[in-house]
Length: 164
Image 1 (cartoon, rainbow, N blue to C red):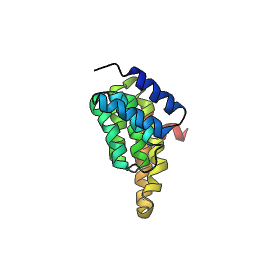
Image 2 (cartoon, one colour):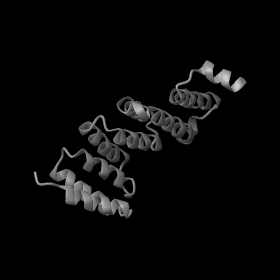
Image 3 (tube, rainbow, N blue to C red):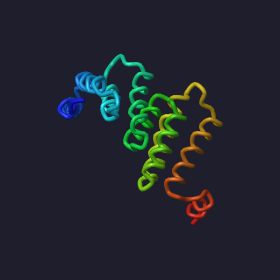
């Protein structure tokens, strides 16, 4: 397999210039030549976010392929988690952020807080037709649980802190 670094660099330049269609095609070409190149699949997924007409499942599949090839890459897991939140795939998002926190324990708090804040903001929008007081409370509770996890704090510690 020839070195694809030149093609990857071209795709990165296109992505940096926000030329999503071009970057998508360039990274697809790299992934076709080297199907085991996780970075190419990941960058293709990132470029796909700016390409009109792609199906959510197709974009998810690109992230999933990158993660399949590099299952312990926290950048891929974090980006996939954010994508899943945006499209309302909250269980997959939660799993991705938790896995990122496992493989990058030093930055676990960042992944937990990222999930908490993005879930809290996006879940009511996605669940709008089902949103009632119980669902709002469920969403807030999950977000707070993850914020506490990010802070390595128990509910009792939080209550004590807030009551002072």
